[in-house]
Image (cartoon, rainbow, N blue to C red; front, side, top):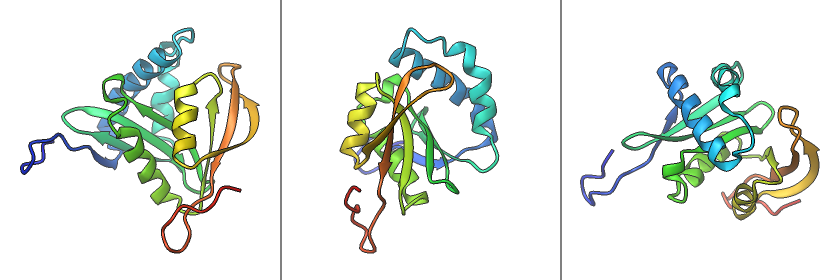
Length: 163
């Protein structure tokens, strides 16, 4: 999508449509394979395709001319499951747009688990107001994770101080 006034590409964040699932699964495999090449994410394609349409989840999609990424969260638990950006869209504000949309769905706070070895993601979440509160292990990969939380927004819309 192009902004008619400035001629710039504009990222739109919208709810998941049923026709998005296969393309998002492909995007997920490509993004994760680039981030952690030692793990076979292609073997997990079926899992992510089934997961994206799961009950109780909210998945938001970022797109411009093409799909750029998605975020999946469980609002009832205020838990962010996936934040994925295509390799081509990294560093262009897509992750911030998706995370802001997730925060709007869970304004009282969010929790997530991130692979400790994914330094780029850890730095991103810390810049966006998340703090490390614990450690764990990813059941699928066996890799060490950080539990991180964002404390939510105050009544006036500013980020609440970290716990």
